[in-house]
Image 1 (spheres, one colour):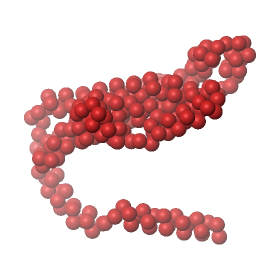
Image 2 (cartoon, helix red, strand yellow; image 1 turned 30 degrees about the horizontal axis):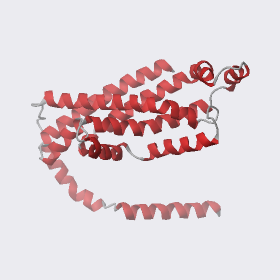
Image 3 (spheres, rainbow, N blue to C red; image 1 turned 60 degrees about the horizontal axis):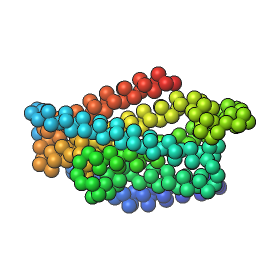
Image 4 (cartoon, helix red, strand yellow; image 1 turned 135 degrees about the vertical axis):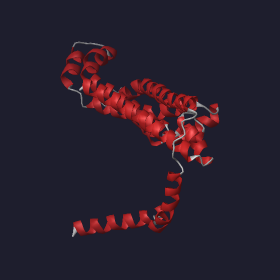
Length: 248
């Protein structure tokens, strides 16, 4: 009986989601010929402005790299305050958890829109957006890694009278460092992919060229940009995966 009731609730939930998401298979079927027309007009690919496209791709990687680094720097104190075994108490723990959930809850795209309005068009707005969103994500994962660390070294250091800074530096960090570094690499890889679309809101990078090309219906250039994005993301994924394997 409980299973049947749960199944009914799931079916109702999906029915409501389908209604509000306006899924229309007939519209997809009608749009396929248009998509095929665009695809046929994309050949041969237009790489005539490849210096500009490569520069924009470099902006995207730079935006993700600096943004991830900024997020990691913000996450260092935040994760220590948000982990139960390193927090100074509930008066620090709960506000820290709220802050990192707030940063994670606001998408990098939304942050980018806000910072474009604040600092103007360009990659710097993207860096700030990536940095703040990443800070919340990294701090959440780091705090969980810290909470599951082996308690023995921490207890031994505490009993010896070591300061909180020494406990963290010499008893905690060596144990969780591989996990912390792996998290940064994963977030860097994720942010490179996320940064490819930030140009749509004026935050620079190759997404800006993609939006301009779509607006002008230059599909040969659109597919050239997509190919560059795929190559860039694939290389970054491989570098990140290799580094994470070495850390494991």
